[in-house]
Amino acid sequence: MGGAMEDISPFGGGRGRCSPFIGWARGSISPFAESKGRCSSSMGGAMEDISPFGGGRGRCSHFIGWALFLIVAALMLRGYYNAVYPVVRHLDIHIPKTVEGKDSLTVVMMSDLHISRAIGKKHIQRIVERCNAEHPDIILIAGDILDYESRFAEQEHIEDDLKRLSAPLGVYMTLGNHEYRANRFAKIRWLEKTGVILLVDSVAMPDSTFYLIGRDDPINCDRATMETLIQKIDKTKPVILFEHQPVLVEELIDNQCDLGLYGHMHNGQYWPLPLLMKIFFKYLYGLYIKDNTHIYVSAGAGFAGPPFRIGTRSEIVVLRLRFNQL
Image (cartoon, rainbow, N blue to C red; front, side, top):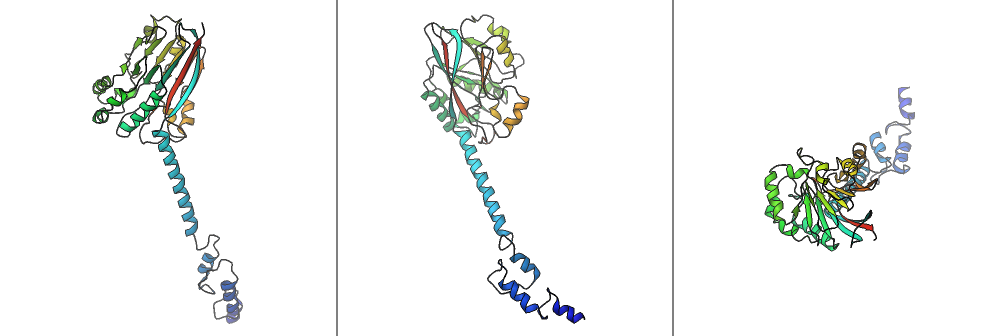
């Protein structure tokens, strides 16, 4: 009985009556059989042969590996491009004030250059060329010109590149939180070599038609109050304020300034941070209008950390301000 059971078992070995048939079936009928032989020597071999990926797990895992590699490589290339090659964004803003002898003003605004080992001379030269190509009336840099140290800017003499920024009404900058990190005084000494006018808690009139306020970064707890800065301003003329962090924007609105320009937020820089940051920050990126006050928060012309932006883009902003006609 033991022998009979062995002979008629459909999974019997080569000794049984049914074995030749089973061996032939496994070797010839299976659509997944390998070409090496008519039959497999074990059930494990048969299971490997009938894998829908052919030849086991190798082909599938290789396909998945290459697909992941190509996706990551594409994201890194695009992220590098987004970070290193700033886009130039154009905005038209109407300021409902009448300006004698002027119906418009072209402002180029940028922030967050973060000059460092990663952002060097070539990147700054590219930014300068794109700014000058817009033929602006005035250029404003809203803080974080340097990253943690000034030595990289000093070694490459990047001050010579910033001196090439050109606008008939001048080039102005204010301080960001990164200017207060590491050796603040060495950074300010270097900034003064650039030829850019440093406007910190100060009011200027680039010409007789509008006011420009450069406000210190809120990291300085002793910075001037908004009320102090505007107390002698004639509000019948346009008032433009630029500072680094958009944390006290309501002060701008309460004091009836016409335009506020900010940076710092980087628009999150890496997706999905922009989605998360919108939950916690009221002013993250782009143009906002509150009453008659326009607010623009830039993503920045540079980047923080590795040279990548995923889902965001470095930018230079060109604002065409239009005034009421006389």
